[in-house]
Image 1 (cartoon, rainbow, N blue to C red):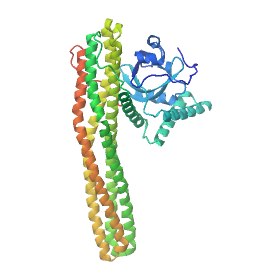
Image 2 (tube, one colour):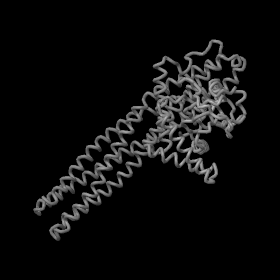
Image 3 (cartoon, rainbow, N blue to C red):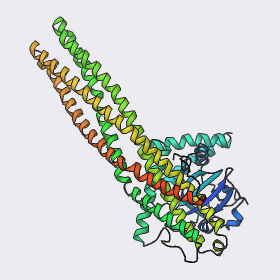
Image 4 (tube, rainbow, N blue to C red):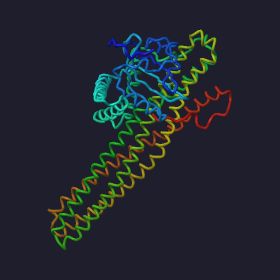
Length: 475
């Protein structure tokens, strides 16, 4: 089957905000499995899609750059997430937010319906990137090269819109989509999955359902803490930026003091020495600020990774529960319980990968937070040294009778130091809050991993559980 000649109708293909669907492919992108919702929304029977390349549902208005970025990410064994426009069998279109994870020798794609309100922005962004790609191709550039250029163009557009990179954009989008979907599901009295399975479902599937609900409850609890966690990280970043901005002015103030002391000749030697000390201390403080900023960036990135991994794991365990609800009511699952169980286990693996990645990101945070404390303490020492020199400079200026000329400089420097001290205090409070929040997280994630490992242990008939539940994948 090939949809390259299909003309899109421009009509949306409807599905509901509480519905989740998935497809699995091999390493080449050939479909190997999916669920009933995927078949209904795409308009193709599942048995006809199995064996076909996933580009069967590719919409011609999707920029090549998005797929180029997707494959580059997946080949590094990382999770890709983003907005994708698909083409149904009847030529209608449907938007999804896709979370695509490497698993075994292929890939798992779990999709939800975008509802947060970003689609207008995404449509304009994708149209712009696609227009650029087509213009390059018209000039004789190959499609592959146009896709590579398109990635750079896409990233520049995202940067101009305020995101550091695609990863930051996709992390924020995933969290926003889940939160908005949850609010809509709650407001409309919908359910993401059945709370119980049909009594006629095989016992092994009922056991998997109970286990998945337990995992979902733990993930939901972690998800509820994400806003506080992310806001705490943002507060630390903002305090660091404020300190850096004030700190940069110290070097200029020291230089001004040195220039003002020069006309004083021999009588200004002490002032010049003080100004020199202030300048060197300010430069050292700037270097220490750079170190703090690097450590803050690492910790903030880890916080973002933890949040993203929890979001991914939650989407995937909800897919497990939704799929169990589907197959629990099918006659074939009752006749072939072991085959149905194997399909569910494949979905569970992806959730385990995300949980393992969350655990590793928590480990990065645990390692980085003490460094932040040490960096802050060093900056406090720098401020004490600057204050001592500032007082000496102000005293010497008064002794020489040039307080009017130099006094205001040293007084202004003192105000900057007081501001920096206040910001360092706020930074310390922010770091402490992050430490408190992080302290409990390893145990919670460890319990989650143990729950997933327990399920894997039962599936393997009592074999010893591996020390690493699954291969780590960083979103």
